[in-house]
View 1 (cartoon, rainbow, N blue to C red):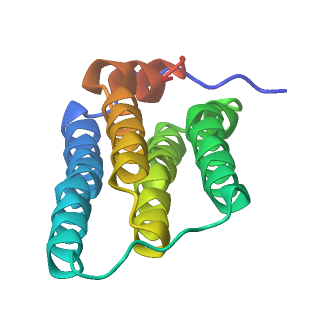
View 2: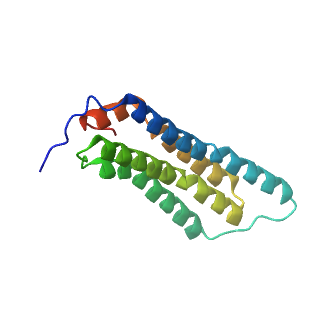
View 3: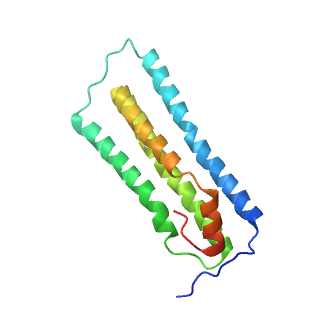
Length: 159
């Protein structure tokens, strides 16, 4: 199997431009979290006169299990996508960019599930637990510029 060729002459400007675009996408996803929280608080305030809906315990367990799947997927997907290193620096940059965006999207999943669970059960505690988990995952998986440079230029590990 051919090894990726080092590309120390690959322009840093291209890496930095792709990194900035990807980081902006990840930060945009991160900024949806306060929007979910605002939506929950507005709905709670507007629906305060209506009694809370009691949902079966299995529903809550199902939502938390699905959140666990998102956590696992967000943690593993980037490593799986970057395991095989493309031969050219352009392909490495493209793969790294796609892996970072997909990882950020999966990291947002627990917040979406928490929002849906709140809409069904009106349990703020469950929502905020899943919101914090999503925030942690998004911060943990924010792209690192130095790791990008190493991966694109040398074909090394960017996880």
